[in-house]
Amino acid sequence: MTLPDHWLYLLTSAVFSGLACVGLALRAEVLGLIDVPDRRKHHVGNTPIVGGIGMFFALILTAAIYSFPLPSTPHFLFGAALFLLIGLLDDRFELPARPRLIAQMLAVLVSTVPSGLQLDHLGALLGPWMLSLGWLAIPFTMIAITGVANAINMSDGIDGLSGSIALVSLSAFGIALGLIHAETGAGHSLLPLLIMLAGALIGFLVFNLRTPWRSRASLFMGDAGTLFLGYTLAWLAVHLSQKLGPNGLPPVAALWILLVPLFDTLSCMIRRIFEGKSPMSADRRHVHHLLLSRGISQGRVVVILVTINACAGATGLLGWRLGVPDSLMFGVFLMLLTVFTHQTVRFWKNQRIDTKPLQTPGLAPSGSGD
Image (cartoon, rainbow, N blue to C red; front, side, top):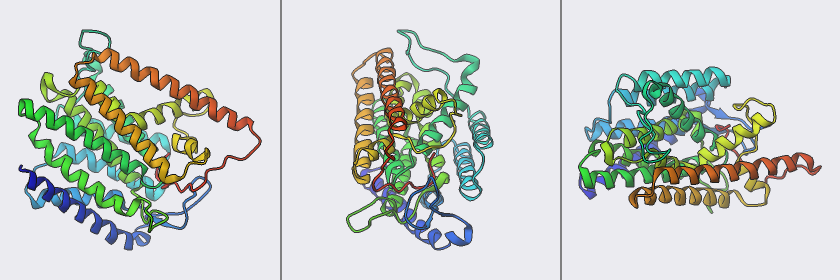
């Protein structure tokens, strides 16, 4: 593909995504895909949750028009469609957490094992030796992809946050792919996927981000969108780290690229366990809630968290290119996670002790996250 082709694919996917989102939003009430404010969802007014379907439609249609076979077809598309469907059913009927999680893991199993896509190794996390998974490869892959998908889902709490983080992470994976392709020629078939998915995200974010001329999102991506995006990002992480040879992206670099959603999800799960709750229980104590409670506006919270994720992704890429040992990169990652978890657990513990109600000015969760 030439550079002009890149822009053409990006623009086409963005236009299709925007048009699909508008068309689906007009039929959202008939489809039952309306997010209604409740005790946990404090957005203003009933909002269509059709962004995920619009993005998936744009990806498929753009690929069809330009005759691009998406990677590992039909396995990738099958898995993406299954995650989209699970999210769509959750948007429509609010599925219980455990059946939803089991369905997601089964979706990973049936979409990755036939194509041979799995985490065979985790890089040199424990020193100079490659940490191979052996017979644990398949179950670890199921847990990892499902975990990343739900991490993106749980980050979907305020307008524009989840989509922006996904776009930044996708861009980092795109840079990694470009570097690998320039050196080895591998991964060429993945380029259309990244470009078209970025375009689909941009087309959706036009309606989801707050702007000076729009005080709130006009539509949400829903669980269908967050799970579809999460599956795709996880799929890319596994493919770039396992399928492109010894010069592929180290798995630890992928952790850095997805740092914000992973930190938020893991810290919330640890806190809930300490509180005697299910790690999958829902609450309003994510990192974006924490920042909002400190009086930071919603728009600034999005900018802060997206910037942190971009810097973390850049750190992962630079560490990889500069030859920083995987063990050191992983050690720093765990250290930062420990500090972050300790501080957030402490913060929310103090909030429970405080008699003043938690204030979250401008909070308008998209209704599709945790």
